[in-house]
Image (cartoon, rainbow, N blue to C red; front, top):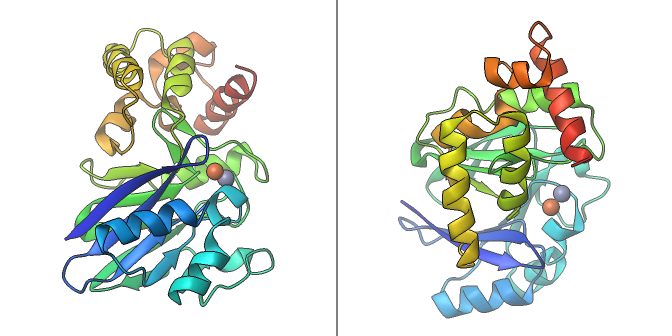
Length: 254
Ligand code: ZN
Ligand code: FE
């Protein structure tokens, strides 16, 4: 199996240490810092063998050089970011697979937040690391891509098994929840979920990971075809891409 440990870093990022219990291989996903991650690995008695990256932003690679230097770990990251991430040993793109210990992850190309962004899906383990493409009740801000591009990217997640656990890279859920209610106010699953999120955050508990099944029922960015959302936005006959674009625009101004 994959033993996944969530490490809160910086103000609202999550990095992850994952261990393949069959081989002992250990990877850090999106090391935004080095010290906290190395300490955590030490405390667990885990030796980092791999560094896995989703995109070039500093809050995801800030610890890369130091961790690589201290552990000699092999670095896997987005081929399209080769010009702006130093130290990659393996560069991958959508359609590729990566080997981590005895486990395999499929790579999705998910541009929108950045143009090089990729995600990793451990199919047999039902685990997705979407980086900043998909969040609990949200999706990444469009720094480099277009809404059409992001909607294309997110659609790749829709057919994954509903029990897929989504290990996003930020704790943005509470503000995403408040926004979601403005575009999908009559969704009873969403209302229930928001209550749960509020109580978790009040106790300083993570709301990540979430299940794909929950996101499909409540995340407006995966539901531009939903009749209730379309009615609220007055976009009953628009395309999914246009509804998605409108939801993204409203979130940017929320
Ligand atoms: Zn980012
Ligand atoms: Fe980020």
